[in-house]
Image (cartoon, rainbow, N blue to C red; front, side, top):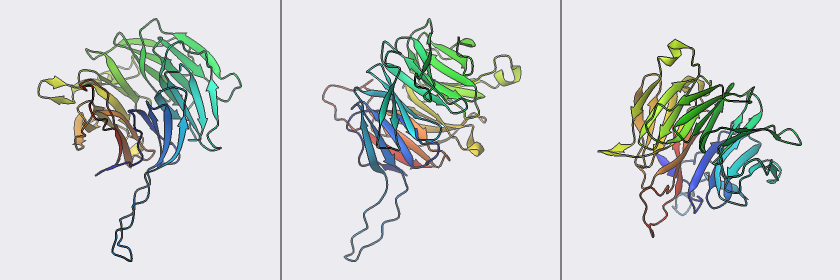
Length: 336
């Protein structure tokens, strides 16, 4: 059952991030220039009150709202879940404290010259990465007074999505390229890999152990790639498949999310502009389940820290929308 969140943003949701330590704390970034903090604690079963009325459900509350200067395109947590990092149309990377009333700090306000499209925090090395439509990736150490540590020009098109785990950062960029970096030595990409997919890349996510990643494209395909280019056995396991299609119509794969539970670490979910969410058994190369179809595209996905909940943002991405269409944005929490 997918339970809608009542106090959802009025504008499209661009990104979701669960806290790595508080399994029912969810961040939702929105085009309304805000980041909201939700409590996704499961609601108790309603019980009849003294007058016979059902008890009002508890949980799924919006506990805080942080307003940014411009629409927010991506959000992530630090390793402790105490700080939210955001990037958006104001070209800056922001750090928002989630523990002391929402104090906000701008990290490297001149780091990018175009919108910040993606942010990703590497827990193993306590560093933050940001990617931009200007074709650059920046490296931050938020512990330092001068947080910006490096800016890399990719000699490529825009950065659409970032993912990091263990010692690896993957950037999905324009020109159908995947750039792989060693997170410890960010002077240049350790590999520039042509996309295994035929059309523009849209989303990328890494398995928590950092050994492989899944990337989705605008034509309803997903590819699973392995990091070690020189490992023939690992490379033999890579594959691509079709998904998020209705007849002859292919829909963009807007979101990919891996289950962080070690017992399910090869399980990942994909969300598309067809309004569908599918859960895949990565190592078996098969679909585990399809969730009920939503009325508008799936824009973002996030598993909580133990894999027991999947947050789903159902928001207009406007591929097939018309002027005057009703905004049917919502957030859903699916118990897994």
